[in-house]
Length: 243
Image (tube, rainbow, N blue to C red):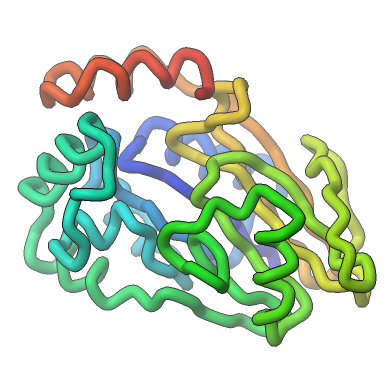
């Protein structure tokens, strides 16, 4: 069984399509796990949801997903993010809203727990430090935890209570061990590790391994769609730089 793992798609259909095509070329996949923030920021929330729901899908809620359905206010968002969230809410169908509002904060499948931010704060915590990693390990009941939210790929290994950061190297296969890991596949729709290419992961249960990959896409096409939607310019410009 091969699982395509996606985080922070953020309504970027062109990036999502490129990821799906790349994953198909690398051996395909049987199901999709989505780590939240499917919508927000980008120009194509409904097509992104439609594409994902065409596959066997396990998904959790992100803060932008809940903002788009009114489950969260936008007071905690910066100006451009809030404007994009309000625009996104106007684009969704009743079916889209029902789907997003029904997403759980956490989900499990076998040895994996899925959450957007962290187990300590599922919607909001950026898991980027040993302290935040340790807090999630203390709450983790499975071997592995998949997170997103920071838009930065990484692996944290539990290391007997002293979390150890490991670079989730591109195109390298990581054999999963008995040690507990926290894994971030990076962002599909708005990378922030200074590489504008979408990042995603594939878990191969037969091999007991996970790998991360990147693919190029037509950034200009996404940006033009954002301009046509009159989305905030800072959100358009940042796609060039992966920040």
